[in-house]
Length: 503
Image (cartoon, rainbow, N blue to C red; front, side, top):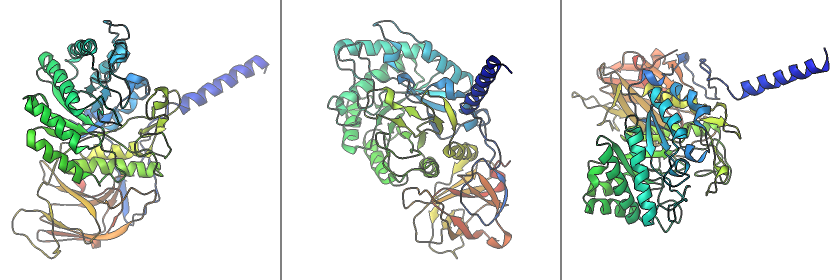
């Protein structure tokens, strides 16, 4: 073989390696996720993922942020969205990327994204921020940036918002105004001024799209004083009717530790607009630690603890009737922008290389697939589920109660199928930050007024579905008793088998 042929073969070989390395397919095998978790039951299968078109609606929103600043590339990851089973996508519209010359809009980059998302049945949740520095006082383009302030910039903002809505109103109905205005020590984004920007923006959206759903606030952390002034300003101007949601992003190390704070935020909003919903608009966990990587970056994360964090947040929000958005589909290259986060943000469900190409799905991708497959609108939450300390209790009426068999703190939420009324309970230890190991504790769990034909045990990290031995569950009248059930710091399910799609 001559030198030239060897050179060609070497080039072809390298091309194949690169191509395979950067286009790894989604694993659909029964053992797509393995951990050191030991479940002493017989495995009967794995949760079967559901594609987006198989799900009519659900509680989940998927973060596709930072496309406006080229920290990620939609074209590189779009094939991974539908298999995840989440329909709604949060993204920024990118004023500065679209209007680089005053008065001239180049929509090509955003058209490509919105058109593809719409064609696949996704529902974009589009944020009008950030600002545009081609205008004096036009606001910034990164986290902690100031909102537009000058007369010229605000008029240009109005034109931008109107043009944006008119262009996409047949494909986008869900909008948000400005991302994390209270982030950092910004002295421009006073809550009164941000409220005014929210009002003027929402009025433009509603004028051009009366059926639009609008989210305001998008608070970067729960600052109750800031929120109170923001809500009060909108209320006093009689403009709360413009908004469907107020959103917050509350990154906490233990994903179950902030619901008291969320309840306080709800009480403040109730003073001014009890019919406006709270939406958790952005949250997620890194897959490894490191300074300069954004929220929660200084804990010793692994892909296991990331997966635990994300699905605890998803199921905790579901258990509190709060719509839940996870940041984000892919790792984001924050280093390309001059913002407060200087390195790659590794909260993505997909690992990315330096060119924003997909390397592979992480463990969290498959865990979230499992959640999306099980928890769609075929289930409704058992809203009056209450714990009882008397495991011997029998109730004549229809009230459903449970006994968790321990004084340790557990998150327990119950659901039933809207048609069959068969039940499912999600359970996990919620006392601490998700750990990087899997240590289970066997608990007894009693359900009064339960409804199971064939209960199974489901691990939501791996998707493993297990038969519960007949000597470890009993039914006496209206009471089901489950004995020695392994529980740990990631969600497990006790579910009627009919509620789980198994492969």
